[in-house]
Length: 295
Image (cartoon, rainbow, N blue to C red; front, side, top):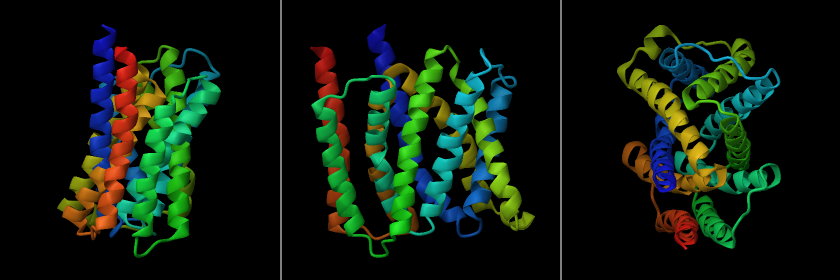
C-alpha cells in the first residue's frame, strides 16, 4: 500500500512538472499581447471556476485560524510566485527563467527542515549542487542577461518553497486536494484584485478571442492551473514537499526544449550542458532516495 502511494506521488509530481515546464513558453507567447497581470487574472479565474464546479462549491475551514494558512498559500503560491515569474519573462528568456526557478527545491528543503523538521540527506545537496551548476552555465550563456529578471526568478523559487510547505501542513490537517486548491486559488485571485484594479485591463475583446491567445489561456487555466495544482498538491501529500520539489529540477529541460521548438530561442552547447547537469541533479537526488527506501 505504501509503495503504491509512493509511485502515485511520483507520477503526479512528474506530470505536473512536465506541463509546467511548457507554461513558460505559453506565457511568453501571451506576453506579446497581454500584461503579466492580465494573464494571471485570466488564468486563475478559469482555474478557480473549474475547481469550484468540480468541487461543488467552496469548502468551509475546520478552524477559523486555518483561513490564515489558506491566505498565505494563495499569496505565496499564486499571487507572488506567478507575478514574479511572469514579470521575469519580460526581462529574460523563457529558458533562463525555467532554469532559475529550478532553485525552488533548496528553499523548499530548508523551510521544511525548519518548520516540519524533515531530515535532509547529503545526496539531496549533491543533487542540488549539480543542478545549480547547470543553472549557472545556462545563465552565463544568456545573451540578454538581466539582474532584475534573475532576482525575480529567485524570488519566485523562494515563495514556491513557502507554498509547498504550507500545502503539506494543510494536507496533514485532513483537507482534500480539490477543495483545498480551490480555496487557495480564491485567495490568490483576491490578492490579485488590488494590482488589477490599479492597472486595469486595456486589452480589447478581439485580442482575447484570437485562437492562439484563447488556446494558450485555456491551457494555462484549465490544464496548468486547475489540473496540475491538484496533482502537485496531491503529490506533496503523498511524498512530502522535499521529495516532490526535486522534480522541479526537470523543469529547465522541458522549458529549454519547448522554447527552442516553439519560440526558436537559441540553444548553445553550454545551455545543453547546463540542462544535462540540471537533469542530473534530479536523477542523483531521486536515485539515492529510492536506494535508501529499498534498503
